[in-house]
Length: 219
Image (cartoon, rainbow, N blue to C red; front, side, top):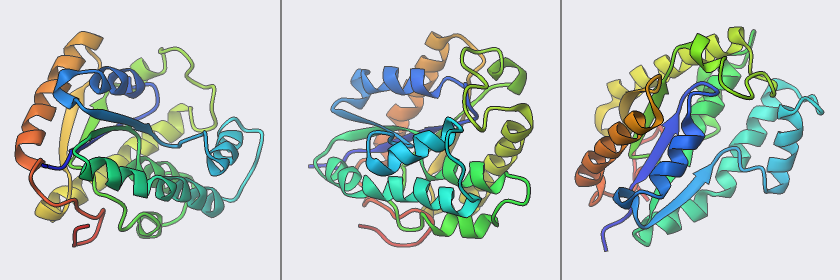
């Protein structure tokens, strides 16, 4: 059986990721599909993260970053099992968000340290970055409800994503494909573009080994 593919949707807050993850998970192009999201707020670690994001709990930057990373490692066995069974995964945020949101803080931990916590996680086959103007994102419902949803931080987050993208591109074969998707259009237009990208990713990656994030080697 050919393994499943791991598709990751990333972007700033309110770019439309959750909507598009839901649509893609129900699309024929991803069947059979497992939908995941990070942070996974259903676990014990996830519940602590949720309290932090809702600003009802304060933690040092390094501590909360390790919590986010641990939350991803909790699901590592599930990710590998799904892919090996031939199921496709569509994921709403992953290690890239974890690194971007921590490193972008004023006097935040160094980029290499932030990445080191997630080295060896299952590597996505493709990162689809939903690109939307910050001013548009801030008009969408719910912006500002959580700790990181402010213009200054979101702008800084976007810059770290750009750095991570450029580093992956430089790695070539040992990194996911990156695809920039114009998320300022209608939901249906964005959905159509994403499905076309995913079709190509499945053709290129479906028969390859499962890679490890930010390091050489496969599972």
